Length: 238
Image 1 (tube, one colour):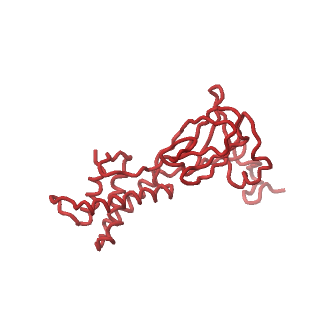
Image 2 (image 1 turned 60 degrees about the vertical axis):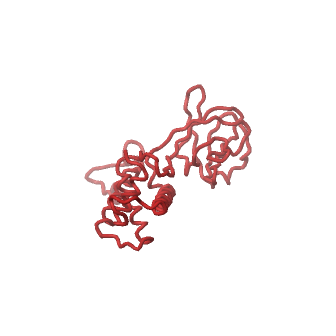
Image 3 (image 1 turned 135 degrees about the vertical axis):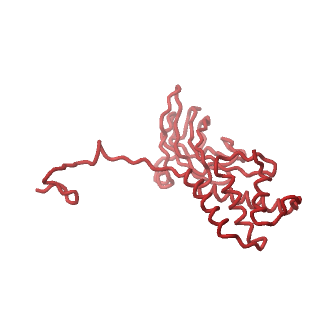
């Protein structure tokens, strides 16, 4: 299993900046590591890098609004606050009841955002930083559990960390880091390296794309009447 150090050495060798048998200058390796972690942060922001969806369970705090989630003394501690909440459920007696995830416009239009109740039906998530803020409605009065579905986050790496990301990430990161290092070291990238980097990113990002679910009303197109007297552009002839 490769380490972050080995990945970055591969990036530097891609640019012919180091000899295969010579030690890598520590300052060069540190600069490459900083570049890698900035790249991971960018991929998180774009939503292209995270590859997994997480289901996490938390306990509501009665009369609290908002609940916070993230790394800094949050109601619900996580290494990083989620970029978005994909779905939410209220757990009562082992039954999962969907909580509708709302947007800021919905929350702003609430006539009574401070209304309380035992059964939470809606939530507005504001991805504030460093902790995100969850505004449940009604404001909970009972310490039920909720399950949140979120996108995983690519964590920052240290030099000696084992590289455990899924298939394709090592090549995509090795080549993309090389691309980003090249201007700093005055190196001209070959067309082959640029194309390989583009292909590797396309593979990784393509695997992370989620196709939306499509459905038609009823069992098919509503009001369909197919026959000799039917024109799909105008409907049935009359």
